Image 1 (cartoon, rainbow, N blue to C red):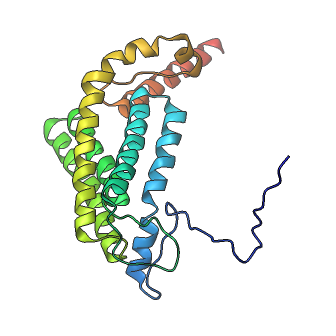
Image 2 (image 1 turned 180 degrees about the horizontal axis):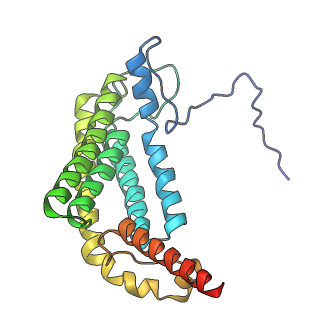
Length: 235
C-alpha cells in the first residue's frame, strides 16, 4: 500500500481557506463586522432548509432545496466560463473568479422564490390583512437580498457589476424554478406521496393546503381538545 506524502506540518504545504465560511472585514469597522457575519446567511439558510425538510418531510421543501443546489451549480459554471477576477487580491487563497457573485445570486434566488411563494401559494385571513402581511414579508425578503449584495461590495469581495449580475441571474433562476415546480413537478407530488418508500419516510405533499402552519395549528388544537374530552369521560 502506498503511503501519502502529505504532512500538515511541512513548511511547503499551502493552506486554502474554504470560501463558503471565510469572511474578512476591516479591523475596527463595526458595520464591516456585521456584514461579515451576515455573509454566513447562505450557510444558515442551507441548514434551515435541510432541518425543515427533515422535520416536515414536505415535497415542496425538497424541490426548493434542489433548486438551491442547481442555482449554485449554475453560478460555478458561469464563473469558470467568464473567468472574471475579483476586485481585490487578498493574502488568503480565495476562489479567484467573481462574476457573478455567488452570495448575491444565492440570496436573490432564495428571497425571490420566497416572494413568489408568498404571493401565489400562501392564503390566509381577510383580504386587507392578507395583503398587509404579504407586503411586509415580501419586503423583508427583498431587503435581505439587497443587504447581502451591498455587503459584498462593501467588503470588496465583488464589484457592483458582479453583484448585479448575481442578483439578476438568481432572480431569473428563482422564477424559472418556481414555474417548473408549480407546473411540472407539483402534479406528480400526489403520486410520489403514495409510494411505499414515501410512506415509510413520512414524506408528504402539503401543496393543496393554502396555509400549512394555520392548518396544523387548528388540527393540533382540535385533536388535543378531543383527547382531553375522552380522558375526562374515561374517568
